[in-house]
Image (cartoon, rainbow, N blue to C red):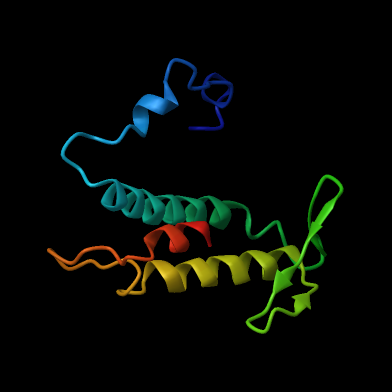
Length: 123
């Protein structure tokens, strides 16, 4: 259905994206950011799953955009050349580890976000 011409050419044009992400009154900024960070991660994961069968190690031998090639840096800081699927897997695994870490993104009611939240957001 979404491939039908009338839908394929449709665009969301009358939505103010700033209005969609405004911090609601009475909501803590860090709570809002944490909630939206995890939601964004899950949406990116879903989006990537729709193209992952086409982006294979053979088809996408490097992670590159325009003239920029991206490398992964391992836990020792060593630059690792990898295929695009490997790079995405490294990134998604790293973020998954963060968003499921109870010390970084607590899920129990009444638990406050860690004092280093600003540092975590920058990762």
